[in-house]
Image 1 (cartoon, rainbow, N blue to C red):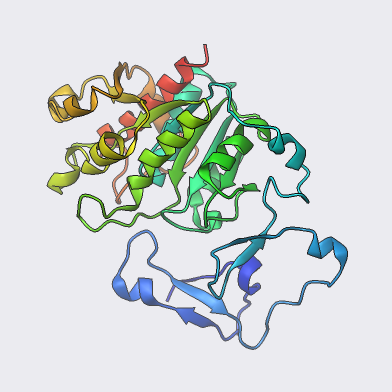
Image 2: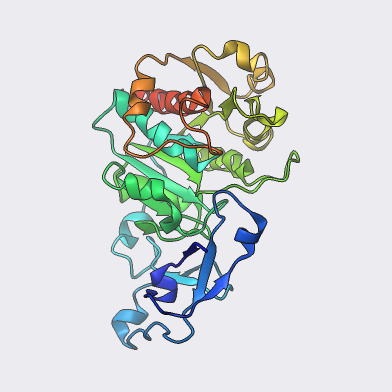
Length: 326
């Protein structure tokens, strides 16, 4: 039985340890999160932290709050943080382009699109809490560590290079602490969806657009487009994108369509055109950039050859964000 342990929460298991497991996700046969999770090592608990002033001042922000494995971290803008002064004076992100995406799998494709045209750009990732809460779960983030300027985990998510309370403070940290030129906002690995109009965690994409606009950024929407998804609600432009950008986002964004998919999406975006700017972006060179990604591209078990339009749409959004840097 494959099981996953987060050493910073439960300690480091060794061969022969008894472990207390949560096997709910495995019994359900979940895809992204279908692991047994180590809750505790009953016979060898982690050592207590030293009771001194340094430890007590290390951080007061609690994530995964009021659960047995709540994590206490240092918020980027709390008084003990070395960045507190900088963020206490920050109120905008100075026109920074910010790409929003429904799924974590879009992150490496967006990054490929940005760096294809702006290889020197500093790109930060703001990870929201709609999917996995620990950033440590993401193999993608581990593989992009040398490529990203850093990760900010917001809301109940934790484990990033910086911790923030909200998308707003996470964006400010990306700009003023990590020095990002461009930021990507998306949930962590996994996605909660019920097949209903409003019951999916990606609805938060629309709220992210609002936060970006409030802080003086440039929202760029990465649309979830697929010719391979067998589910009618996700074929063409996913209903997730149509709902998040069409009904939740109150501020205008640039919604990016990769050239060549017009027949696939039809007039699905017409209702969104009254609020948003629909931008068609050339895809020359993007497939090569995607093939050169340092991490594996995969969405719903499909790679680049199986779901080319999905990854091109994300890369095109990255390319458009890069064009706004000029």
